Amino acid sequence: MEKLMEAYHKKLDNYYDPDGRLTQYPSKKPMRIIALIKIAEQIEIGRKYTEKEINEIIRQQIAFGDVELVRREMYQYKFLGRLRDGSEYWAENDWRNAYREYTEEEQS
Image (cartoon, rainbow, N blue to C red; front, side, top):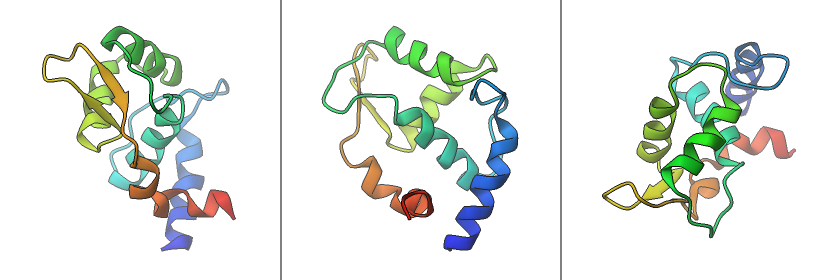
């Protein structure tokens, strides 16, 4: 699994522009998860955000226009929690543990 994740990380490098922004949303789930991790790392645990603030964080990390897709996926993959009405967002406390296998090779 570690070698596979290493290959995904390497391939995902091609999806970023020189400014470090994601240029397109990956179609393969493991690469999507890795890309979402990079965005989730910009969201402070324990802080509440408005939808506008979350959108701005995402907008700074991507070079394509579909902020809503990325926000929706971050919620679906449990990087973000939110109130039903979308008025408040937060980083889920345990996303790092949930996706540890995707980041282990970066830590070694």
